[in-house]
Image (tube, rainbow, N blue to C red; front, side, top):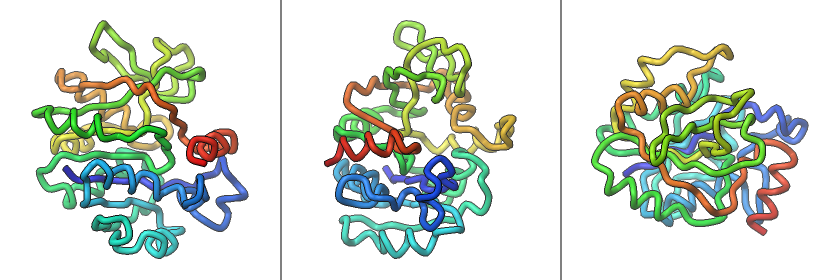
Length: 234
């Protein structure tokens, strides 16, 4: 299994902190935010990692992470030239992935507990995709999973009337079919290729599994959640 860390975006909700740097380089705990997903993956045995970021601060990201030797992994890089969404960023990893399974983390997602159990679950899963869901207080901010017993029947992006309190958090697992599904989806009303649309493709094929994350988590994309991320890791 290979790893992909998505670290693009403008970080507008954290302006002016992000006026001079990528939000994934802001300190969380005692280290830059992006160290967290890298260390999580390496701890789970994933040592080939691709970082996808934007053009604005690519040099800063590379200087910060280097070759990955410091973390015990090998890091390569891709540039997302335009803000085309999470699925668009993930599409840039096609040649890197080859035919291997992928563990994909959003670079601003902070998990208090290790991701090892979820990596192991997907290692044992023959095909398809796997997502992590968590009960949240503000479901209209996230992609929300509608559940039917032990199955996700639909994921809706930032719904006004959520069908459940379970958000799909920023840790995803995909087989190599993910790139076919990305090529089949259309941009959302925001003009972006949404990862929710990709996950719904897997649902249509009956190939999306999930785990419920019971630990502490935040997405560190706002001042409030950045503060929470520091609380989790300090």
